[in-house]
Length: 438
Image (cartoon, rainbow, N blue to C red; front, side, top):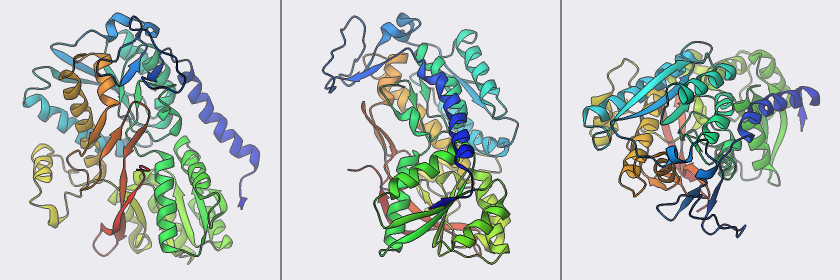
């Protein structure tokens, strides 16, 4: 396997990610399961585990008493998002679904009468501004939970969320670091984990190339892209799937040329939403057509594939949500509910559906907390978030959201979806591929 970047450049990208992570390593709270292998018990005077499952050490909170105080009247979420900047378009789609679901829940009475209020602040997709936002949320706005979009944003906000025992509920991030529950007990990420997607990718490639295949990776230099690429390399190790080249996709044309020269069977785009269409177009322009092109789940935005035209035909990605534009689900009660709540022009876009689902997961978590002995408190909410086996509306049949005191699986399976240019939509291919290990 060879790389078209020098080792120092790749290390530089990782160091950049590491800088984001430094904020989180200072977290002041710890967690443990009652059956922890460490054998160290947490005394009842410094811990809370009302359900007998997940433990959080409230003595390490900036204000331990606040972490157990039940919220009444209004439950406030501080949401740092790229309302401007390079991914503002995709974030707008996501928030349209999110806002619609929150509004519908409030109209139905909220959480046992407690209304959900969301305060939005622009971070321009800049971690430094996300850091400033979370400080304002916690210190000035006194929010009950926080949320955000972006791996760097989660990294910038994680230390404050953990130190103040403020749940970060379902942020749009897939970086593996913050799924380490012992280090980041208050962070519950939404997007499929890099290693889960890599598990899916390897399973898919094996099913199509039982005798082995060579893979080329077009890698976005962001934390998400580097993480996806490294996860696939790790998952493929020891198999007959060989990563032959990893090339940056900063210039899609240069990436396409490198991938074509390597003559790989499979191309994996380790990137973000805006990479997927341009990479396919660049490969088509030089006449390179690998046998399989796999995109990450975050590329599920029809806009980019429509723009790519026939070049995108046959591209696959892992899916976990229902397509409200699919006539076959027109009578699905969950789809009907979704369409009755989302009225924006982008309501059929997968990213808008994704935002709706993340809000629904938040609502289900708050409902579960409210019904527990800990109630709608920080402790009650994080305990509920670590105790989920939930087939959320608008998730595909057979897929559940799994979260336990010791492991955040998230979406436990994926459905392969293939882009059909003539129909300008994705269609299912094959059955579900499990990534839960169960």
